[in-house]
Length: 277
Image 1 (tube, rainbow, N blue to C red):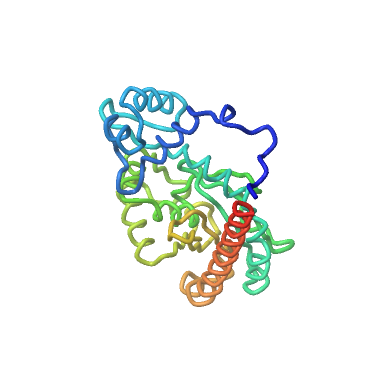
Image 2 (tube, rainbow, N blue to C red):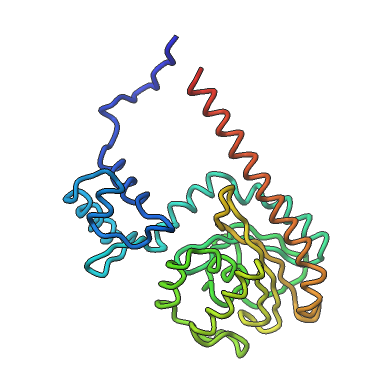
């Protein structure tokens, strides 16, 4: 017995131009970050003229940049992915684990994703009555990525090509007297973050604030979020943060990853049953 048709949906309802536009975006990958019109047409399976029209439209909308010959995705396209993360309930999945982390360490925790060159706060779990930052942050707050532990983890998790473009365009200004002062200095720091798979920021965002962050990865290894623990400098030295906080923080990130993977697989199985019903 064939499955019942979805009410109101037929071939005439499919927007072919939207489908082709998404195919254009999917043509870009870590291996193919800068593409010509001909490259995009071949990878997306559209004509060269159509590829050019879509690329110029995406450029006008701010999702693509061009040097006149090649095209590349701009970080703005991450907004599409962040909408997906929101639909997955990332914050809801993470909060119970973050609460346990706060109870274990006695310090506050936050979870962020990358929005362009900034970090975007998705979830917060604070220690009651303890004000850590002079900057007032809440869910939805955006901050520059480069002087933050979560931002550095997210930046370091991007492809080499993306990171090179970021370092070219980034305006790195000291936020405090401890902050890195140039893109070249930041690159050295991010190279170390990649090697360590965590980032510690010591008073570079706010005097008196130390924080440590680790990545949260998708099933394919892509870094799509970061979780941290932050505290006043009187609470722990940098060495104590590594010894006392890094382990629990990494376990928290791993539990969030496992929960998200389990949810994704359950949804995949559910869609599979629906399709075969």
